[in-house]
Image 1 (tube, one colour):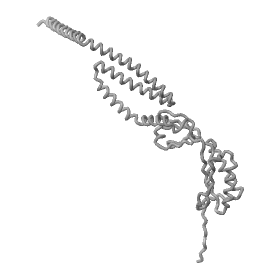
Image 2 (image 1 turned 90 degrees about the vertical axis):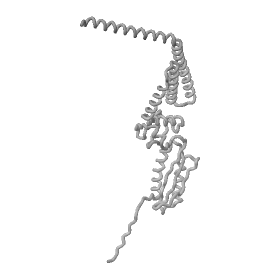
Image 3 (image 1 turned 60 degrees about the vertical axis):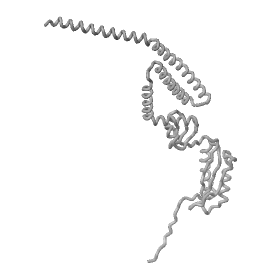
Image 4 (image 1 turned 90 degrees about the horizontal axis):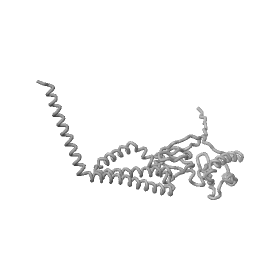
Length: 295
C-alpha cells in the first residue's frame, strides 16, 4: 500500500471540506448582513444616541439636583453622596435602554444586578444603618458642630459629623468616634442647644438649725452673683424632711456658658457659709447605746 498517496488523498479531501465550510459560512454571513444590516446599523446608532443623549440628560439632572441641595443648605457631604447615587442609577438605566436597542435581553442583567444588590445590602447592613442614621442627623440636626452632647453611652463636644460616624472630643481631650446608628438608636441630650440652663443643687441642713436663717443665707448668696438670671426667678425651697437632714432645693438659672463655673462656686460658697454661720451639714450616722445588764 502506498502510504504517501493515501496521505495526499486525505489532505485533498480535508482541504475541500474546509474550503466548502468556510465558503458556506461566509455566504451565510453576507446574506445575514444583507438582510439584517440596516436594522442592525439602526440599532447600533440608536443605542449610541440613547447612551450619549441619556448621559448628557443625567449629568444635567444631577447638576440641577446638586444646586437645589446647596440652596436648601444640606450638608455638602450628604449632597455629594446623593448626587453620585443619582448619577449611577440614571447611568445604569441608560445602559439597559441602549442594550435593549441592540436586541439584547436585559432581564438577565436586571436579575443579576438585583441579586448583587441584595447580597451587598446584606453584607453592608451595618454600614447602611449608619448611613441612614447619618442622613437623619444631617437633615433633622439634633446637634451641630461645637455642641456638647450626651449620646451613644458617652459625652463630649461635637467636632465632625460624617455620613457614617460622628467625632466627639471628651472633656479630657480624647477623640471619640461614634457610629451614627449608636447615636440615633438612643436618647440624644444636647446641653448646648438652649441659651440658658438651670442649676439643680440639693443642700441639707441639720434639724437643729434655724430654717429661716438658712433660707436667708441661700437667698443672699444667689442674689450676690451677677451671673445668675432674675428671669426665670431662682427657686429656693424646703424639699424633703430626710432621715438625717432637711433638704433645700436651690435652682438658679444662668447662661449656658456660665453653668459649670457658677455651679462649682456656689457649692464652695455654701460650704464656707455654713461653716461661718454654724449651720451643720449632716452626714449619715448611727447612734449606738449600750445598756449594762446586771447579772
